[in-house]
Length: 271
Image 1 (cartoon, rainbow, N blue to C red):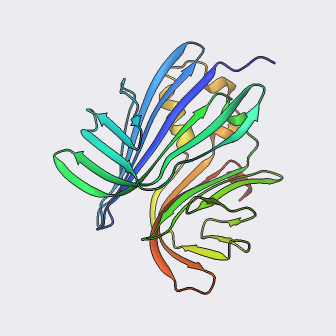
Image 2 (cartoon, helix red, strand yellow; image 1 turned 45 degrees about the vertical axis):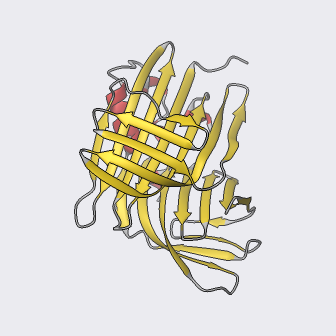
């Protein structure tokens, strides 16, 4: 069976400061039928201020990974950053087909981060992952996508869930894979792992039809791309939150931490 002409290399990098400042970067390169487009986006939330979004399609180098260090420079956003691994990497193949795959590489479930952004020097914690997608994304069976990462002083959790008729999910707690979890927008829990993480969704970082907005801008570079995309995929609702997390394992004391998590709803008309 013929492979698709689609290839997406997409990086996600984030930063959390001790004062609650959060910065999320996306750096991606999309190739389709011989045409290549770069995409860079920044979501920035400073406590007491509105969320700021910056996007551009300039030719920018993707993040560079060398052993336990990831570096990234974007002159348009005036950012230079270094992410140093503070946890062991994770990866898995989320989707596998004759027409293409989705490979997820979480190089840093937890990071020590140093940023220089528009003259400011910031230090804090973070996270870094890369997606390599060679299948058309709407071929992946899902009505809902949930993803998140949580950090406390001693714990790191990462989760992914695809829901259609059945569920496919992946969750790691401190590097250990935990099966059969409950993953919702306001909580993540496991009987087998004997833990619960409550998420308060305190700050909305995104709430929009993000795919529709990005594709609308991509059409200038990729004419005809919209014609092959199903409306269900194009009109998906995307919600991203910064949450205070309350994590409890077995009968131990509640531990507090921070989570960044999202829900993409590919059937918004049904909710």
